Length: 277
Image 1 (spheres, one colour):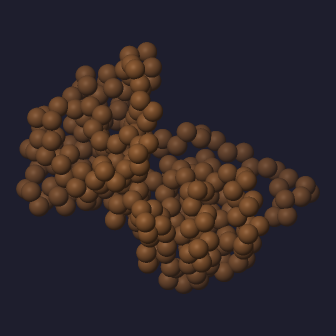
Image 2: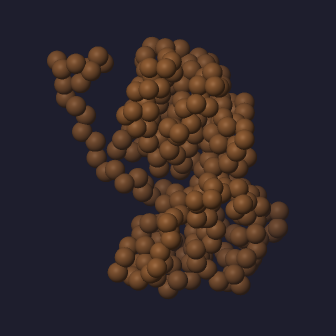
Image 3: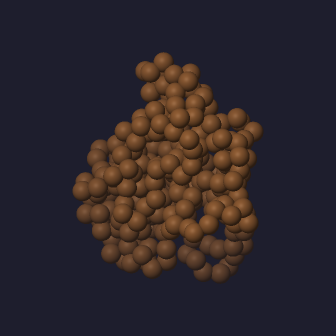
């Protein structure tokens, strides 16, 4: 059985912490470096449901994409929900490790996993300077509507589903993808000359401006759904490391949906033109 420090060293080699953005909070949140690790759980969010799942599973380590304390804190009191998570993890000897923007810029990383989930062929990074996002090609052209339906079928189901901006009948050959919030990348997307951009958390004004600038098609998926495929990729990478070292590690991917949105009500009078019936 490897020690936590040995497992963390391998995870840091996959996603070097120095590649994280300066504002980010990556690395080990809690855990004894000398403790043994036999079972690992991967998830997107370090929320109570994931902590409870790890306890039921008998996990020794949780690896999440999102940080628990992104902006720092002065307390881990169990009267706060984040403090309760920390208390429960320590009580059950479960370590927590975070790979966030260092996993976004890794190769392979979050956007490679997203492209893989959509069965896209990666041809290069969207932002070569830091490795964010991926430029991809479809094996066969699809309309923007068909590509959105493809995303809806291949990504985990959420209350939001998939939103589309642009001409639904426009033909898509090349796309850019970026797991998580991506509307800060529009300049890079336009420079890449792609037909469509799939990401999450697209806001009204950036989308309005983007569609006025060009016929670019936009696919807006739920934040959690665009990053969950990374959990499967990361788990497979740790499995390979475990086999190489001869470790007896059992690696799991949480299927718990931690997207915060719980329901969706479609507008009953909506038409493709946006005008009331």
